Amino acid sequence: MSSGLLALLDDVAAIAKSAAASLDDVAAQAVKASGKAAGVVIDDAAVTPKYVIGLSPKRELPIVWNIAKGSLRNKIVILLPLLLVLGYLAGWLIVPLLAIGGLFLCYEGYEKLHHLFQSWWSKARPSTESKRPIEIMPAELERLRTKGAIRTDFILSAEIMAIAFNEVKTQGLAIQVTILLVVAVVITAGVYGFVALILKADDLGLYLVKKENASTLSRLVGRGLIRGVPHLLKILGLVGTLAMLWVGGQLVIHSVPWLYHTVSHWVHDLDLTGFLAWCFEAGLGLVLGTCCGLVIHVIWSLFRKPSHA
Image (cartoon, rainbow, N blue to C red; front, side):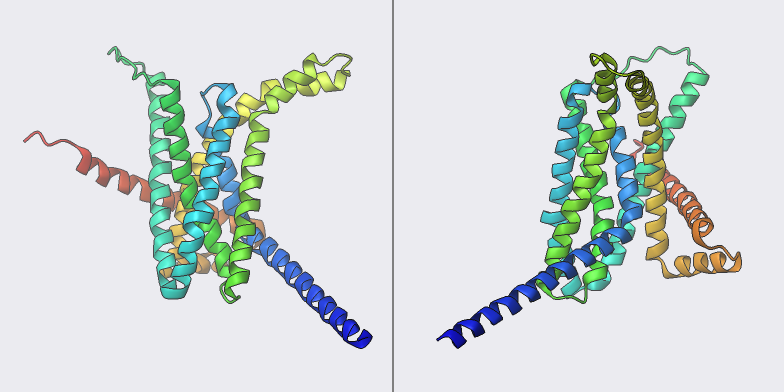
């Protein structure tokens, strides 16, 4: 009886060790997959803050929370099952779909850049025509901003999840699902937690300034946060727009074999390595993304333009 019990305990211990090893393996692969997607994660964090600029500060965290829920839904409910099905039935479709998503990002990024330059131009050369501004209720503006952010997040999330899936496509189904779930939750929490921290940094600064018995250093930091955060948000808004063009261009480059090989040859011929190689590839992605966005903008404008025949 005792020998049987000892044997059973040995089996339980073996199973526990195996489970622990599996968890370690899952954690390691999840970290690796997340690291591969780090560039896109940074872009995602840069893109998001511009969607709350100009809205009530009281609505910043609720908006970020709604976008985060939409992002998690994109990753878990839509992209995860889609990648598993495509990986099993038609893995070759993932690259073309990412290319289409890249072109969409190019178009969205160019549209925002186009409107930004139009705004600068109109301020530099004020028009004599009096145009009545289009009035949008705050609730409607918030709804449109949230919807646009979730739509853009879908493309960025698709690349993140596709990169993660590529790292685990040779694993069993249970491991694939577990790692993709971990990546989806951790990256979403990290990105939108970081965004929320940035958006409320000025509130922290106000607290430090008004806090009783606060040190001189605390008050100085508080004033710096109050003055610096609005400028930081504007910079992040521009960075987010450029990031959309860059990521879109990179998706197109990586989806078209001859483009990818051409860029690789240029990097090799110029003997670029490390940070310089990254800057060169990022610059090409930004230029290509802007050009693709311009072409799509022109074509779409032709179709949108009403006929006066």
